[in-house]
Image (cartoon, helix red, strand yellow):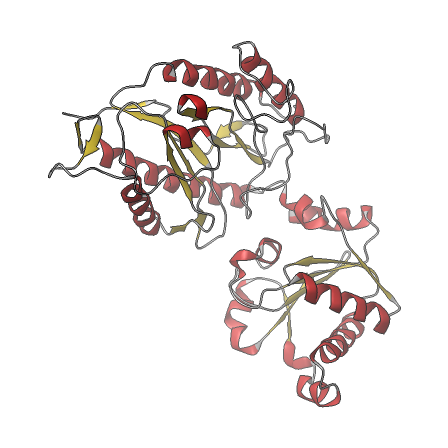
Length: 411
């Protein structure tokens, strides 16, 4: 949570942090969105340890700046036109501007840098700043940085936003299920009232429309994959293919709320009309793994241990897991889940290979998503909920949607 940032800075011996704002929309810059409380604006956030966050903002965005609740510092405080005249090279001008900003705002010592910039520009700027400001040591963090560690736990307001995104995501999935139920079966396919085959591309279009109605967006796409593609975890589905009866359909949807920027992630596996031979058994194995892991969730439980439990359940049902074989293309071939928030994948490791010491703690939000994949058998199954450990330690799913495999359809 944000209240942890000063402690995290102290642990890393950081005297200040700088969060780079975007050149355009903030939605692709999770660290920035987090620090400005979801406001849509550009600029720079500077925070000295044990001092309030300061937002350097442009006058044209002053109303958005006021929405952030941060201490405001206008960009016009510095005479940028004069700086540009003295330093015609853009990098030199940027370095001089930052030098003046850092001096005026008391930024010195070890300074962490976060947010989003082009990698080549960041390298050039960091090198030039180090030469121009010997009193500042820019510090990079490759993994588990201050902002990501703070974001790992959510407060009550964040949890409510994420629960709302979950409810709206489930509404999108329900729209798809209702649409399929309203069609009919003919010659092993799903057809509409005119007898025209319903295609996966039509379902993807329906998903986009439903997302738009719910004020959600899917910047990373959506998975609606059938048959062999359902057995390849990140196959998104062949758009021209007709919907077939009995085939496994993996429907993985991970949209972002346009207003807050928070993601939801859920997966359901369906079969239309009936389940092909072997599919129900596969589904039951995944659901058993899912249920046992969810039953084991409590504050302090090891996320690495949860992955081990999922592997054990599926191994006992004669499926290969990453604990047994690597590389692995069939069976249970991935980790159990991940943290989620302003990014669809956030730190909370559930890896098979290394115990990174992560545990379920109050305020954490994460996915549980065991799966089994057999493209050679034209099927795959994944079940996924977004789950939170509330501040009081209560475990609850943010994905209020049933787990029925078969979608009934008329003839």
